[in-house]
Image 1: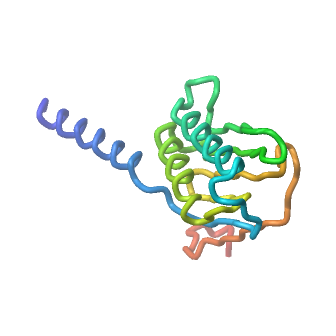
Image 2: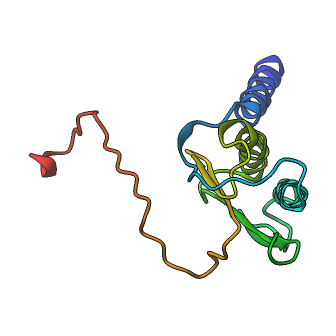
Length: 157
């Protein structure tokens, strides 16, 4: 009996560790054509912003600074950068941390020299811009998805 308990516990730990280390599921990106100059003050501020977002995601859900959401700014006008991350509430802190870490790395490859970018995964969203978007409704970008699976519920008939 103890051997089975140890096996089940070890298997559960392995499954949870594997899930936290998995690459998040990429969904979309919105990278407008506005660019910054390489090695500029804006790029330095963007690098600092992405590092700050990544480090605040590692604080986890028990910390007052990050409960799956964090926004901040770096630099001064005209090179100020606004950014945030938002993690899905039904995922744990480790999944959030992993997703934000991947998003901050992927954004440089997927939107090189972009002054603004939004990158979305199943687990989290990361956004930055040279224009303040905090508390501003923006409906210019839309993503529609549907489930191709059949529902067993008769209420959909």
